[in-house]
Length: 101
Image 1 (cartoon, rainbow, N blue to C red):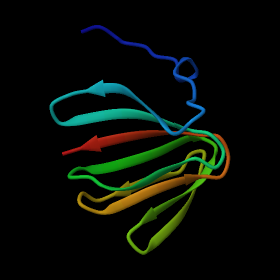
Image 2 (tube, rainbow, N blue to C red):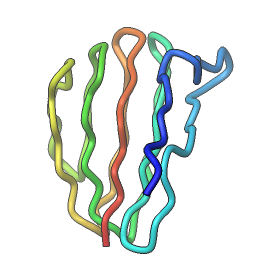
Image 3 (cartoon, one colour):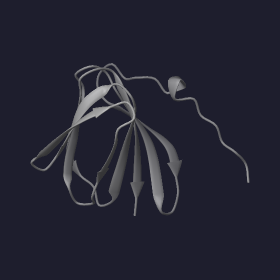
Image 4 (cartoon, rainbow, N blue to C red):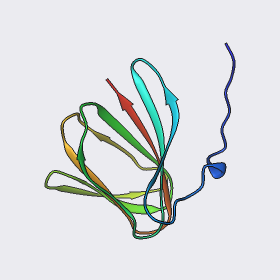
């Protein structure tokens, strides 16, 4: 077994829209780093997997169906599979998105 290291600061932000950087691809899970500048958003989408969103830094809002939740550093949101979701940043933010089957 070999430890793999990554520095989230090296993955940066994209000026024109959300940046999604893969961190891990495995049989039963996929981990992505979502980087958003102030005011950027991830458009509504529907996933066939449950997704855990862990906010590393920043603030924003998570919309799931008719529900809305505030996100801030340390927040962990769990969104069930097949739910339509979107994220809107209020400040520059980074979110670890963990997709599990």
